[in-house]
Length: 93
Image (cartoon, rainbow, N blue to C red):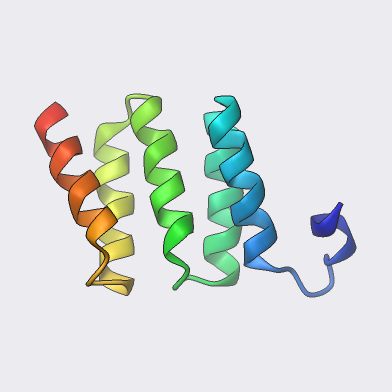
């Protein structure tokens, strides 16, 4: 409902939070779509990249996940969660 109410001035937090709910429910494509929306609104918000990459890993889209994490690291170079997930994902590739 918050996303619908804020259509004139979208808020990345709303999309990122719904993406997390989708992630927890196993709705990975929906999670990725909401992360993309959040990233368009605020490309610096790290949780959008992390959740998108997590959904991509769950879909076995490991190369896509690595690209998402690289993009996130460009914007947040000190993010240890990105670095850890990249290392774990690289082991699976």
